[in-house]
Image 1 (cartoon, one colour):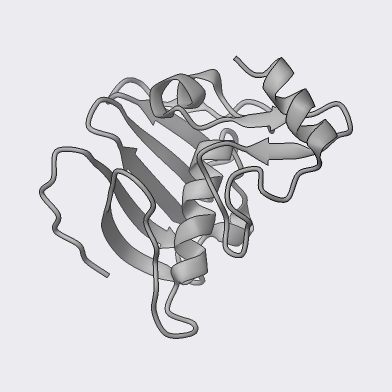
Image 2 (cartoon, one colour):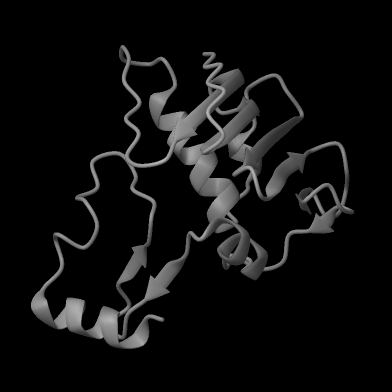
Length: 161
């Protein structure tokens, strides 16, 4: 899959050896982007790769069969990150690299503050243990907050900055 969009307001994505994907390069434009295609072509794997990088979810099962590592690069023209997992190392299999800096080991299972700050995509936990991912929808998700009750909406807006 290739998209060679040269728009300056793009969100560029490179995915290597993630699930069924071997080598994918996409440029998403500002606004809503829709990925379409035939069944079993990797559309959902693209979404899962972006989700894994943004929300700190790396595991051995995500590495393409027959490969030893995956790499996901995200670039919003201001900041970039590389999220990678390598089975060839004993410790610290999953690392982040922000803005071409030094690799940092993955810490915990929560979203990293650098991702929230640099990409403006966050997960908010409401009091009733409902999690809402802002500015990111998975396949079949309803658009932003449309499936929430009035109480959940009130709670969300009162705790959000």
